[in-house]
Structure formats: C-alpha cells, structure tokens
Image (cartoon, rainbow, N blue to C red; front, side, top):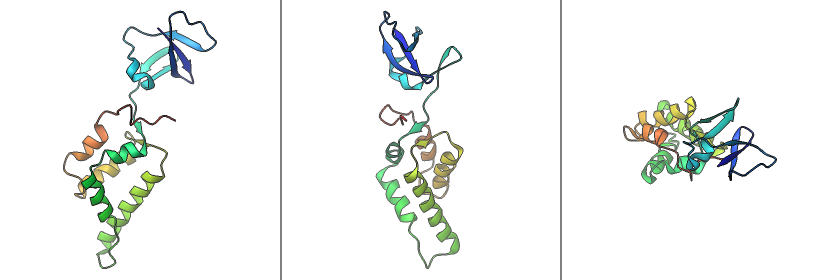
Length: 146
C-alpha cells in the first residue's frame, strides 16, 4: 500500500501500483489505517502523533448530563452571594464562553487542563473525573479535522 502525502499529513491510501502526481511513500509494515489522521510526515519520516484536538460538541459530551446541569447552575450569579461566590460563578461563565467560542478543544493545552481540573477542585466534578475527561482516548467521531 502507498500513502499519498499533502501538507505533511497522509491524504489517502493508494494501491502499490500508484505513481500519480501527489507525493507518496510506501506504507510501513506497522501502519494502522484506523489511525490515519494521527500520522505526520516530516523530514522523510512518518510518525504517529496521537490527536489531542476534539470538537466542541465532543468535549461537551465528555461531561455527563448531571455535570452539565451542575455547571449551568454554578454559573448563575447570585447578587446576594459573597464576592468569592460571585467570582467563582463568573469564572465558570467565562470558561464556558471560551469553550463555546473556540474552534476546537485541545486536550493537551495547559489552560484546557487547568480549567477542567478547577471544575473538579470546586466540587462540580467527582474526584477523578477531570483526568477521565482529559485523558480518555479520542474517538474517530470526536476528532477535530481542520
């Protein structure tokens, strides 16, 4: 099998007889076609770089319905609350707005990781959920493709 390369990524697979106009290489013996989007080609070498970017919907769906409700309720401003409570609610609204306005969510970004871990620290997620949300393998249906 041959792999056609465009912009340092595998664009398609081709038969061994392929000699077309696109740059191509022979697929290595351990090539995994199910992980096609995770391969990068640079400096004559093919490497597997696990995806870290998911769609906004995929990120949102990593939270349970109960967690989403808890986040929405915690984001409500209570004018009678303490300044600390109001600031926490505002911080949650800012975080949710940032995610909603993003093109995608990169699970490896320090600010993404800190945000989810902060939600757990505030008790809005059960202990261990932040690592699960951030660390579960990215499914093909979750991956962000620019």
